[in-house]
Length: 241
Ligand code: GEK
Image (tube, rainbow, N blue to C red):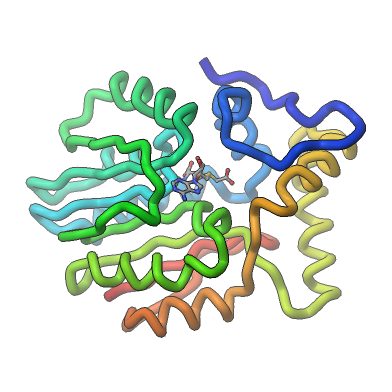
């Protein structure tokens, strides 16, 4: 049963953010009130799945949390003979995600794995989703992960990459961080909650610029790339093999 996020209301020192039971219990509320455009991105992942998923292929949801992107794909895939592999390395998330999948009546099979996405083999894929997950992967492992995804995609297959982003222009970067905090206030978070969450996540979520993402995607071999969604310092990109 999902609850309201009240995890960062206390003052004082905060530990680094982890995806434990407490976070998993409030995750839907937390991500909707924290990420501008999250619900739209989830909806449009379904629209992209409808168009790009190829018959007899595999879709991957890497860092699936409670399975929002998996469900959106599952409800929109039209191609026959497909399955979805959903992966997360948080046992708390995977347990709740399994309950969500068990409640869903759709036909497309979902295989849920509790694993590190760095260890998962990608193959026969027509759609790979990294929806706000790459930002938690150590910087030095990111190039190899995107190359692995490229290698596991079929020709014409798509990567959807959504990330919190950083801006080279310091003034714009500060502006977008400020506007993001305003968005959180508008969604009911107090200034204490916003600054405590920021302190907890600072060393855990490492954003990069859109330029770095594009360079990584193109050097992995993707032939086309575009940003299809952006609000302040949150963006979603598509790349096609
Ligand atoms: C959504 N995509 O709702 N291996 C596996 N899982 C990982 C790893 C890793 N190396 N690193 C982080 N995670 C979801 C939202 S949340 C985004 C994704 C956020 C998992 C982590 O356990 C968490 O569940 C998820 O990636 C990130 O569309 O909290 O900002």
